[in-house]
Image (tube, rainbow, N blue to C red; front, side, top):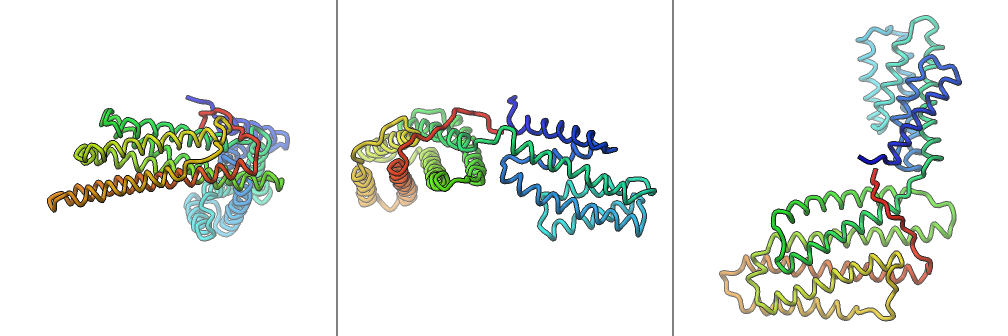
Length: 359
């Protein structure tokens, strides 16, 4: 079990909210701590959006609590009716994320003694807002998340695993069941890559130079995600249609293997070139990719002409393998163009810290 930054920030936010509530002599500091737990977010930008939503949600909960208590009292049935109304209004206003805290505000206010109710309601509302602002301060000051590191390392690790399996699959030298299990893990890694990309995209840059560089990086990271997905698609096709591959002519199998070896090598080099570990070559072999794709397609057409009508399904599956490999090669080529263009404008190396902490 790892102690992630978000776990630590949650603990600090609880301590800060309880401390501030105690300094301000709040009678129920625990509500500040509860609010702080709801308000912690993985990015500063999301924390900013959350604090706006939480203020709206808390106001809704407080207003309904006051109205229902003044009109109907604070019987537990009345509290339930008020909770239903709060949920419906939050959904209507598209504030689904604030429903939990709105209900905490509602219940904490409605369960207060009837004497000096308005005063107690104000104190409870203020206490909860202390927790919300405490979480925002912690997210702003303590350990700002570096999602670029997380994003690149997740992409690099996933790509490395995909490349390893493609190399083994093209030679039919692997454990069938183990690959099936790892493909599912790789699918989850792809989803994690998309989440980290979204979080990195939300991080704000305040200088024009940094903004332009980040905009170009976002384009590259998006293409890295797309290329990794195409690599996984290729792996899935090789795994699914293994028998069809074995039935192909020897020269066709050899061409597929050589083309895949070239692609995964180039994909691997591009990931390293982006962070400055591999220099940009003087001239690229764009024509080699196009020639390899044409050769692969010509071999498929030749195989199609030689096949009989009984092998239609075999040809259909072979066509999927060839099309997926060509699609993968085009995405690798596009990634190459983007990274070369990026380094032409930004000579500095991309600084990436090695981190495996994803929480």
